[in-house]
Image 1 (cartoon, rainbow, N blue to C red):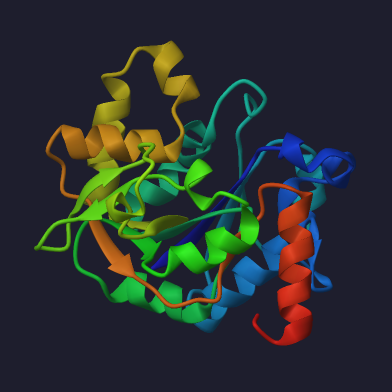
Image 2 (cartoon, rainbow, N blue to C red; image 1 turned 90 degrees about the vertical axis):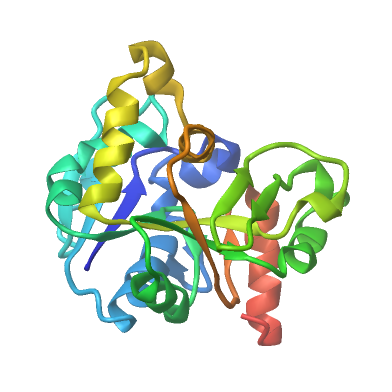
Length: 244
């Protein structure tokens, strides 16, 4: 099992915080978000870690990671960063992590132990965190439904009902080489313009609607995603209180 971190984007909603560094190197609790991710992966037994870089990619040199490049980072979405690491995805199972999240090692362990070729980590207790992050948690939360067999039945839609949301996808997932081949085949069949603009959640939704098995694994917190400066302020408060 290998680890792969998708870190090509700038994170423009972070404004001045990413003016001189990639979003993955924004600090939380005295450490870069990337350090949180690498620590969780390594604590779960994953020593071989790669990163896909783009914006200010030179900042990732010398960190002991295998580096891939997405030279079109400014005009493409995260799916194209995933495809930039095709050599790894073809060869071994990978835990794939967004670069703007943090999570415990146990989340990685549960993903690594799960069955299935495409497996997502999700937070079934999402509402508590979203209520801290947003005045109206449903304004940001996306639909997520799991069927009786543990397969994801729906992801990425909008709803005004909390009952439609059984969890929130965390930006952390596992692909086996067979799972990656299903993803790659779907991407190859897409028009280039659509392929360039797909985000991972939209891609997963398309795969599910096409009948591809995508499994979900509930994982424990604490975890979080950093979309804007207010998220950093919230998590710093939670760190100070011992909640993280």
